[in-house]
Length: 116
Image (cartoon, rainbow, N blue to C red; front, side, top):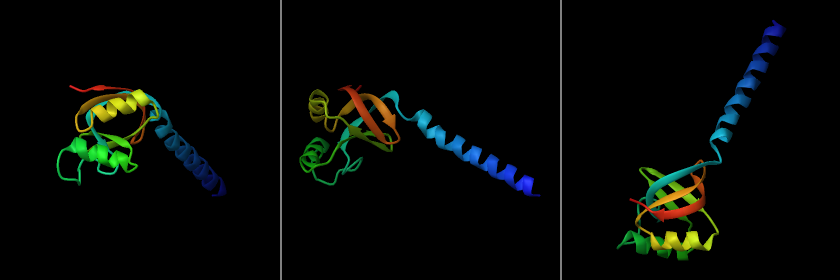
């Protein structure tokens, strides 16, 4: 009886370790996502009346981060690259293609281009 319990515990630990490694395999994978440039505060639904671009830029001035809305998913865009930030500002409220390492809902941006 005691041996069965030990075997069950070992199998349970192995299962947990295996499941914990699945997100790690997906993390850090370079992908290209196409969506609308927004901000993390508003996401897909802008609170400020007017154009989405104006709302995004206003939220950025108040400390928000850029985001990319892809369908019903909102990805937070992480970058300190001035060229990428300038391109995101230009594309605020518009379609963009963002390439970077995706980890959950965060993208470490490598490049930004106008979307189609």
